Image 1 (cartoon, rainbow, N blue to C red):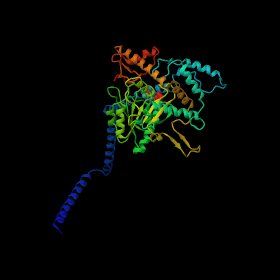
Image 2: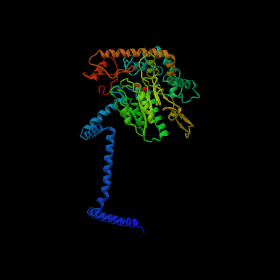
Image 3: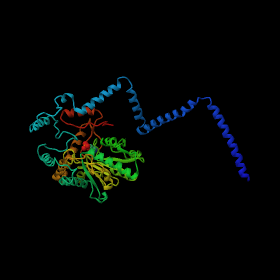
Image 4: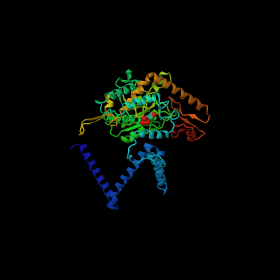
Length: 484
Ligand SMILES: *Cc1c(COP(=O)(O)O)cnc(C)c1O
């Protein structure tokens, strides 16, 4: 036996006796407590730790101010009467959304007429139409086609739509005409957004949808599934600017994605640094708008592209408003920053044909950089008794008439038509901006890049200005916190 092992065995013996002493004193200390208390104390500690942990994570997520505010709002609801007041106010809004005001509803029909009205139905509809607000020319962000509804571009669209009103592109073999229209609307839209430039990769593809919201829903869903395949992300998160459209909230709610809304920078653009801080290993998607609906300002798409590329996440560019204006404004010489597929990192886009594309309502295009991404948009069901079912978008049967209407709008206008339209609306926008600058009480929010102009005031209640404009027949869009 050598000396080193004998010293180690003697030190291990002293360590053992030390343990025995600790154990004895711990047991004698604990013997003063009831066994039941000993059982519950750790459980209770665990519970408190869990509550604290979730509280801290809420603070981390929402910030201290919002958390305390949320806490304050929920405690104030405990005061008798406050909760029922808030609920009643909420109910009012819901009621209004559901059916308009009650007095209107009184003569609304609740069941089918026993004897049909036949062609007389058209007369009744004309009467109803007469009650709508006069939206031509004085209505912001609602209908984008100018001129008289019964002639020119309007009547051309109507004729195209009605010619194909009964087609259904779900059945491509039957309606090859509509299949061609859809493919061409997508290709022509993509070409405006650099699909034919080498830097785009030459594989840009997409589908027609029912509007900007559906395009966005699909792009978000596709990004989610693409990132699940690429990185195994199962608890997806996305990051958007405060100015990004509410459709992203809808997508987050529908598709179970955690959403971070990040304040804009001083120029009212997406704040790239702030967005970067929210990126983690669950991030699937960031979004840039070109331009955003509230202020008409283009986000720094190139910088967002670098960010997306660096982290290997998706970047959606929201061109719902800009898709049919920016490419032409650039041709006209306006200083327009980059926004299309020539930017590395852009994975998808939404472009509304039913806005400045001057197509009928219910038409938009969703585009992807390549087929590898887009394939995650499709749903294929192989087990259905109804047979093999493949559908590219959210709707099953789709209105072929609208696709035909969009094709008619684009083909009838051509590049020159859109160029001329863009020239006119850009000039009107500059004129409006000039006029606002001459009113000392008003200011323009940020530097508008396109045709949308947001107005604020430091001295007037801007919502009152909006009310006065309404009385003069102008329907403007009221923003939330316009002056912040
Ligand atoms: C209009 C718009 C949308 C949503 O489009 P809908 O056609 O109303 O569904 C989304 N993003 C931006 C920037 C828009 O202007």
